[in-house]
Image 1 (cartoon, rainbow, N blue to C red):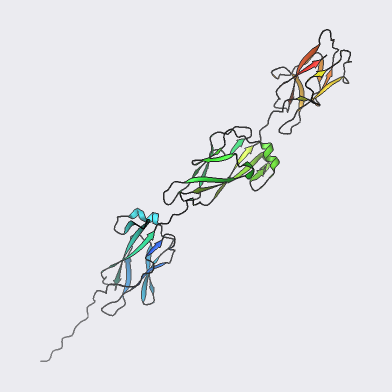
Image 2 (spheres, rainbow, N blue to C red):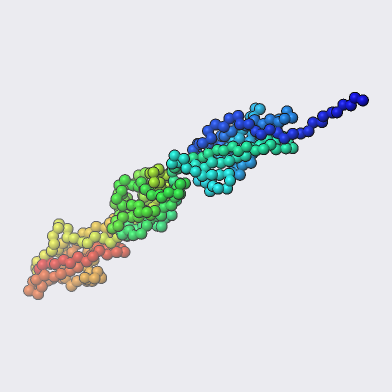
Length: 357
């Protein structure tokens, strides 16, 4: 009796993937961009079907795609960052080592063939990322004071800086500021300070005029804006991107300067026979005002309080001192008066003047 025994096909496990190519298994971070292929694999099956390649990737960075008869493992998006990956050291799929003084992290991806029913034994695909000394982040600026009044002696920080170094190294900060004011600011640690015993003068700054480093009375506010550019530097002196900010010097009403006698005299004189009245001019006083305000003049006491004098009158508008009552030499050989100037809010220091008879 002839009997035919038919051999029925059974789906067999696919073959272990074979590596077609694996270019650049060690690369510096930042040099691996999205879509970079790290390995090309081929999948075969004893049943002559076409299995696909799948991966187990704990990092979540990589994916697989068909590429002709083969499959590519590629970076999905972004860039591979050494600092982010080294946090997973010792978890079985990421291992940090140092080779020739360069830190690196080796990533292990398991690849296997899949025929929709069975998976082959997996093979490890390793990809090593080298650490690269990266520049720090641009400084963050926390303003302590956004403005300072003119004439105020500086003290304490103007702003505090912060930045991040990807390698966790120490950082220093540097600034570029108005070239005309290069000696006014300095950086100490992470703080920007106005140098000790330094004062700003609004009127002097305004006279410099507007520039790329200065704004004058922007928005109708009497103040000068000063521009500062800050950068962070790491131990290798790599500079970050720049952060720009402004601070302002506010105008403050300042007292007039002390009065002086027109002509430079240090004292005045009047004859006892001079006839009192508006034409009896003895001398003229003048003063200056830092803010350019109009001034008035007055006779005052040693403390600056307004007074009247028995013999002298002072024109508040032009500072002219005249004799208002006859004066006798035998009674007074000289008289002393105090003169001050006012801008309407502040008064100059009293000026002691001797009028010789």
